[in-house]
Length: 179
Image 1: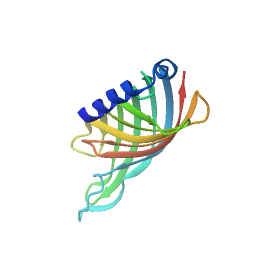
Image 2 (image 1 turned 90 degrees about the horizontal axis):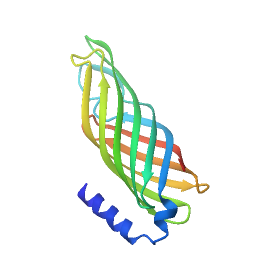
Image 3 (image 1 turned 30 degrees about the vertical axis):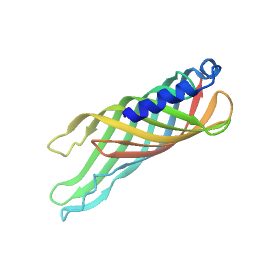
């Protein structure tokens, strides 16, 4: 985390003087993807079937301080993992998160950039058939992505992200609009 912060500061200081005025501002967007609950399907003699992948979606909004540094708020619906356990029957886990992250971007041309992000999520997991039907966690969250600008305001965005404690990963494709 400290290294990401230092890289962001270095990139901000290395930006040309006009970059701060033209690239600062608010943005918002949404994305659809597939999530995988990486530790949900554990091999055991009692697990009869398991599906640890589901459709997922997210909404995000942020503020770019310059072309290299931004802060972003996110709401993510990670979807539901399901399984069948001998003696218990059908079990499922549904997970949603809200969070904030620092985003560092690097332009690789006039229309293409890559980015990394790191922050924290407040995550709620509901597992109705469990002895712990609800689980709330504050957890570290990070990701990598790429952005292609169609116009100065609109961009397509592809991203991979992961949660640290509840072990969910997501690949998504979405759109971003800059004001």
